[in-house]
Image (cartoon, rainbow, N blue to C red):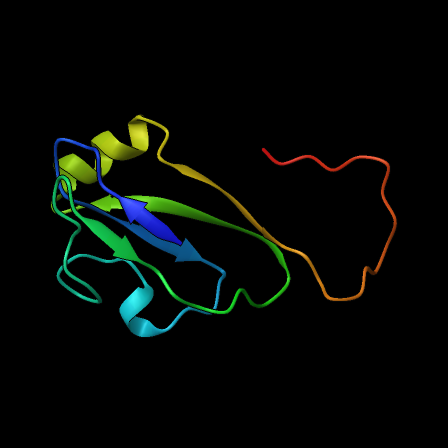
Length: 94
């Protein structure tokens, strides 16, 4: 996944429930450097395990992290199994 930071502050993407390499975990100052304004970062990992997971941004401090979450910079990350387990008419995420 390629992330180009068009925000006014540094950011990163943090994953919940996705088995990512430590350097792809998106915690500035811990697992990676924050992506500065105007810069691009490539997250590389195999999407496992199957299921509905989520991601959100991390700013480079508590204030920018909270502001980015308030802006809605999060979402569902759905990893489909290789073989479908069930058939559905509809699927929803909240």
